[in-house]
Image (cartoon, rainbow, N blue to C red):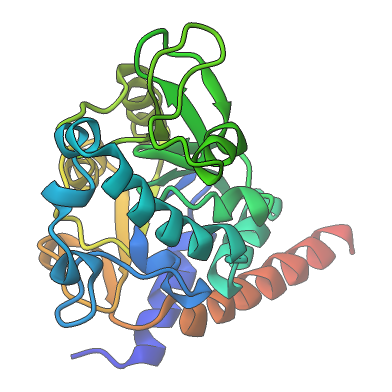
Length: 264
């Protein structure tokens, strides 16, 4: 079994040899920012509550007030969260010209706050509200303000339809345009870097296999094992914030040295 240092060296080489890297990030990317993940045994959010009672579109429509109370509490943690070292390291990798974009399962917009560009949000985000009738998108504050005033059936200012957070609930399909954009990014990438995803939620879990089938390399940093570990080029089971910034720092130094050699 390779040591952590050997795995870090291998991933560093993969990144240096790649020019079109795509990162696929999951809940583990944001746990170090204080946002609970969903499936970690013993601590995951879905072990504490029933997702089909608090996060499905049917339960939202049937018991909007109960769902909104839960979402407001969860939203407070999301809104106060700040990008961690892992998010910032991704932004630095992009500034180095290696990272082309991010595919994320997260709704917290921490990649945006870290000023990373070209982000695809598979599951929407917690910062917007959407009308279930006309599809109009609003800032989430429009919805929150109505709820805080006691209206637990927040309505669209345009057509009067019911508002919901602009995140994908259980029972809702992903946006076709989102999947098309993700497909295009995967088709062009030469390295798919999975950060903090258990790779159990479909259709997102298909992307590592798709990237491999198209000739890309696959690297995974995740505390828990995934079903794709056996076919990945390198797997590191550790906290992203503890290893990824170190890797990016090494890469930054290597690129700088190479540039100085060219200039001289």
